[in-house]
Image (cartoon, helix red, strand yellow):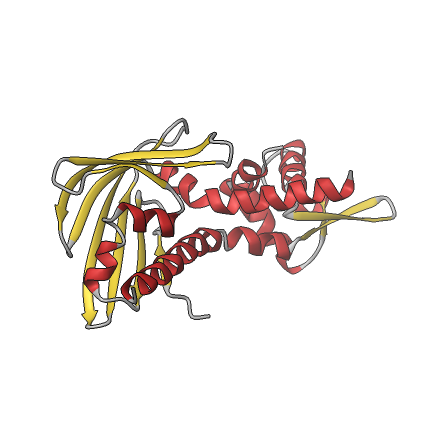
Length: 152
Length: 106
């Protein structure tokens, strides 16, 4: 499959760029970020709060089937311009990762295509690197646990 | 054991990176590796131990000598550490696209 999502993270910087081209009109792509029931469908999170406006805020959470909270994140929406951009903070709760800043830019390519660029700025170079490594580390740990299960 | 920290701490050290480069082309004994550095032999041994522990180096016993060589598989995993992060976002965005296409056709 074509690699549609690009991740750029220059060494020694606090920045991270995630870019994706979608086979969706711009309005539909933007809607995916603003309607709680749609967000819940593609992100798999419950939307506890979402105020799409300047100086608004949001809170998402994921629970297991028994209702235990597995993940909860929140942030302030600094700027909200429909079909153009969202500037917000993002912070995971109960995790030793500091808050980061996100610039989401939505652009029309053609009638049926659009791009989203997320520019993330972390508190420090180390924090950014830790965030990048998290899925990699989880992959290794999963393989490691799998191995331990097989060996024991 | 915290694998995440170990592997990345292992390659964060310049001496350890130099060791990896050194053994990339040929397997070497600890003595031969140490002769390339000004550091004391026990210091180099400690670096070798760390690199072996996180599987960046593999040890091979030949008689009384231990030869160290590069575990290319492991090095590739580390150098490609961004891929799982990219994949995570790619999966998430694929889902977004699918959800929105379904939403549009309603």
